[in-house]
Image (cartoon, one colour):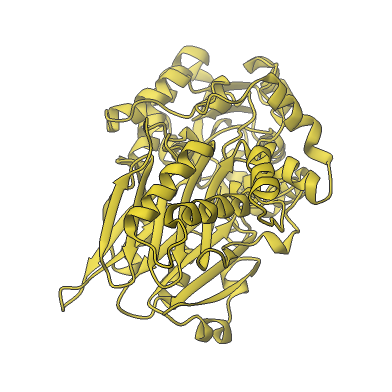
Amino acid sequence: MCGVLGMVAFEPVNQLLYDGLQVLQHRGQDAAGIVTAEGSMFHMHKGKGMVRDVFRTRNMRDLTGHAGIAHVRYPTAGNAGNDAEAQPFYVSSPFGIVLAHNGNLTNTEELYQNLCHRHLRHINTGSDSEVLLNVLAHELRQAVQGRATLSVDNIFDAVASLHRQVRGAYGVVALIAGYGMLAFRDPNGIRPLVLGKHTDADQRTAYVVSSESVAFPSLGFELERDIAPGEAVFVGFDGSFHSRQCAERPRLLPCLFEYVYFARPDSVVDGVSVYQSRLNMGVTLAEKVKRSLNLDEIDVVMPIPDTSRPSAMQLAHHLGKPYREGLIKNRYIGRTFIMPGQATRKKSVRQKLNPMEYEFAGKSVLLVDDSIVRGTTSREIVEMVRAAGAKKVYFASAAPEVRYPNVYGIDMPTRAELIANGRTAEQIAAEIEADGVVFQDLADLENVIRELNPAIEGFDSSCFNGCYATGDIDEAYLQRLSDGKNQTGIRAGLVEHSVLGQSRSEE
């Protein structure tokens, strides 16, 4: 996962983009970047680290212009230290183009071969986002057919051609020098992308595109709508707005993990309030707990902060059990799920959470988390809670068992790292040293989201059920994903970080 942001306004956008990235920081903590457009010139600054660490006053002063795009990067296993893959990316031909991407492509190697060997374009990093940028640049060249100027129809034709070639998940914002801002979403709508606008006192309309609607209120924008799967939106630097459906068979299959974990609770994703969906997850999970555990053995319900709080509150209310906050979070430690490496995650759990002993002493506790992925965090928390004096520790997950790799932008690269792979709930409980574990049923989770927006046709539930929306993922692909994890080098980087579902754009 990552966060992308794009804006065309009638005032300098550098501070707005910075503020927007701060709000999207939860989507990526490894690197950040901003590019602004001033006439036909781009101004760029990017680097590793949190938003507050990457940008200084001198950097912000240089980011002049009334339009720009921005990105926060989510680190993935194996390439978290590569500064060159910070986004946005830039190419100069056929037009100056900068691009930021959230998602992951699944046919990057094929695209790479076409670009480098047939179209003679150069790819400088192991990022599938740079490959995606070069596909767009090539298709723009094809669309203009040698002409020196670019029309809106040319831009949409290029996106339509890109959709026919590219497979995977992508939410994209881009700037085309001298023309405007382009945003588009993959035909399955796996990764989110929303449109906002603001009309000033002179009746001029400014537009913003973001991975999440939560970025809009603090910037003074209102949520207009979701960008539809396969749709492209173009906003000229003069404020003109254009949109077109560019996919042949679009369908809305949003990623379930956005609702479970990644999105902020105050966001609306594809017409669904993330907060309301998590409340409702707590109700259905409570019903599963009733069927699975002896409620007389549960004294108190506690969330593992922060994502699981809404579900835990509703679960406690539905069970008629006290709700307590026994784990206090250090807010200066990042999200452990999106930290690179098991050792880093394990250390960060102890730094991030501190148990209050008087809330645990002598009690049987039901801990509620949004999900159990690798089990590293869960095991550490169970150990901490027992050490704080808990008599029994039960664990409830608002998400089903994560049994399959995610190839669309979440760092679950191999089956071996997934604690639920090949294990029953009882065996998972033993692995994390809990007295019992209860998982949400997938059908219940999907129904929770669909009831809030019946227009949703289906979901990317691949990490739960192994069904991949793009139709190009088979056992051989997953085996390459596993085998290629430890490859190194630029070409290996392309395999490891893109074909194998571990690109920088996973953020």
